[in-house]
Image 1 (tube, rainbow, N blue to C red):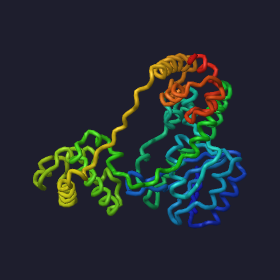
Image 2: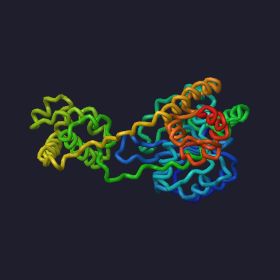
Image 3: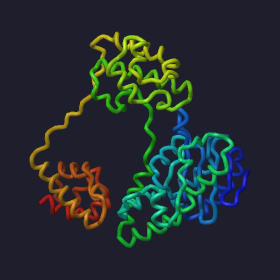
Length: 379
């Protein structure tokens, strides 16, 4: 175990230390949480450091030795202890993916700042505006899987959670004064239930920007190239973009080369990439080029049904109303009512407050705050 004046550093190779820590922070009313991962350096990203702050100290936990944080699970699942994050979506998904940790009683200071009308809501921007603190982001994109972690990286990680609890208290006090604390509480409750997307058997091109513009043959080439890149990335334990860039694959798929010479002439790959992956890419391209026409993929098109005139008119009224209402609240209009919510309300056509409860997209706080106004707007 290593100590520093500004933080305590623990590794999970000693379960007794983690159990002792869990017992200590289990008595806290609130803890601040952040994490560092290695998505820019490895094929399968993982949490490499977990930061927890109480009002008295900062603890940095290295989860890599044993690959689990079991003693801390009750702390995160506790509905009594507030867990304060900033921009928690990625963190909630990662904690569940790597350790099966579910986070209850979540408070996201980024959401809180947004509902107070802040235009810049990154942690560095919020800390600078509220506490005059400058966060050095030099280490944000470093490889957090390296061991031992340098002292300056650990100091940076500690800084990311040091101010979260005072920030939470400040933001929450302002939200309560403005009557918006319940808005943020509901949004945070929904956020705490997000989960990582499970890998499926769907074609890779469905999540590839620009694929929808390709002809079927080129789409088949793209899918074959994406599969080849995926296998290469997994074998080398590198993120996909460090094998080949998306723009390069899209360009090659749009005009498939007939041989390695033409692949080189495209100028989309470095000499190193050509040497390492050129032969495999040409094999992948040839496999796609000989596919029978009836086996070529077709990019799925979502054809939206034309909306009835009365629904379109309701949407127009709602959007006009939300612009005015958001201006009075000094908020982004999408926080008052998103486009998807406006469409759902307009298609349902509620006549009474009770009708809103059958619309899944609508928050309870929106019903309480704006329900009567929306009914009046819809007429």
